[in-house]
Image 1 (cartoon, rainbow, N blue to C red):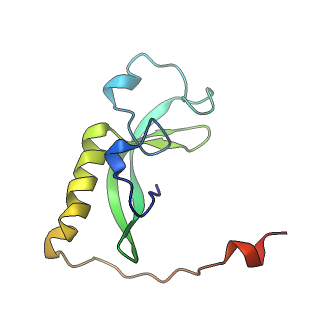
Image 2: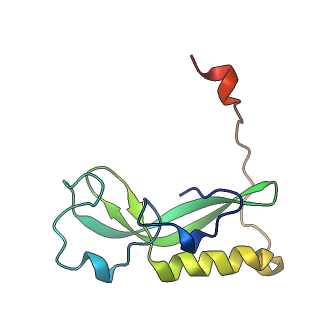
Length: 110
C-alpha cells in the first residue's frame, strides 16, 4: 500500500489497499481488479509518507486476491490509518528501522 504525501487515506476510491470492506466482498466471486481470484483475509504492510519520511505499518487487516495479489482495506481501517498518521504515531517508537534505495525516474527510464 502506498499513499501520496498529502492525500488522506480514507479519501481514496476503491483502489488496491483502500476502501473495500470485508462486508462488501460477501458473495463476491472474484477480485475487482483481475476478476479471477477470490479474496482472503490477510495482514499486509502499508507504506506512506509523514512529512519527508516514508513509514511502514505492518499487520494491517486487508482482503487479498489469491490470483493477482492486489489488496484492499476497509474504510474503517483507512480512517484509522489516517488518525494514526495525523497524530504523528502518538510518540510510538518503531519496531524496526529499514533502509531503502531511492531512484530518480528521469535517470532510470529509457
